[in-house]
Image (tube, rainbow, N blue to C red; front, top):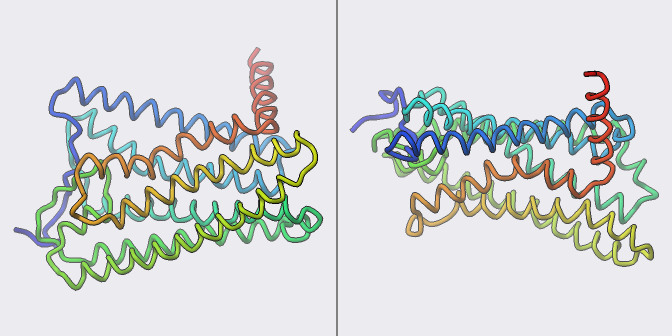
Length: 312
C-alpha cells in the first residue's frame, strides 16, 4: 500500500507480452500518428497559404486541426515509446501533464465544435447577417473563448484529480493517463466523489452544448431542404454532415467513457472507448473535411502543385 506522495511513476497498460506484438502496436500507432500529422498539417498549411480560405469556417477548421495535433500528440508518442522500448512507466508529473493537456485540447475542441455549429447555422439560415455576426473580431473572440475554456476545464480537473490521495497501487489499465483509471486508485471516498461529481457536472455541460449543436443542425437541415438548387443542397450537406458525425462520435464515446458504471467496465471496453474519443477523431477529421469539401481539395491541390514546381 502506498499514498500519492510516495508515488513517483505510474504503470500504463502493456499491449502485449511478446516483442513482435509490441513492435506491431508501435507500427500501428506510428501509422495513425503520421497520418494525423500529415492530414492536419496539410489543412493548416492550405488554409494559411490560400487567401480564398480566409473565411470564418476555415478559420475555425484551422483551429480544429491545431487542437487535433495537440490531443493526438499528448497520447500516442508516449504509447509508441513504451511499446518500442518495452516499458510501461510514466512519471507522476508526466501523468499529470498528460491529463492536463488531454483535457485542455479535447475540452477546447468540443467548445470549438459548438462554435462551428453556430457558424454553419448562421451561414445557412441567416446568410444576410453572416458578415455582421461573424466578423473577423467575433471569430477571434470565439476561438479564444474555446481555447480559454479548455484551459480552465483542464486546470480544474487536473487539480482535483491529483489532490486525491492514492493508496491502491500505481497500475493504470489504459495506454495513457485517464482520470477514471486514476480514480480507481483512490483511498478517499469523499475526494473520489468530489471528482466524480465534477465529471458529472462537466458531462451535463457537454450534453447541453450537444443539444445546442443538434438543435442548430435541425434548423440547418430544414433550411437546406428548402434550397431549390440540388448543387446548393449538396454543398450544404457536405459541410454539415461530417461535422455532425464527428461531434456525435466525440461526445457519445467521451461521456460513456467517463460515466459508464464500474459493473460494465472491462479492460477491452475501456481501451476501445478511449481510442474512439482520443485517437480516432484527430486522425479522421482531416480526411472527412478534405474529402467532402471541394474548396479545400482545390487548395490542397494548388499547394501540392506549388511544392512540386518549386522543388524542380
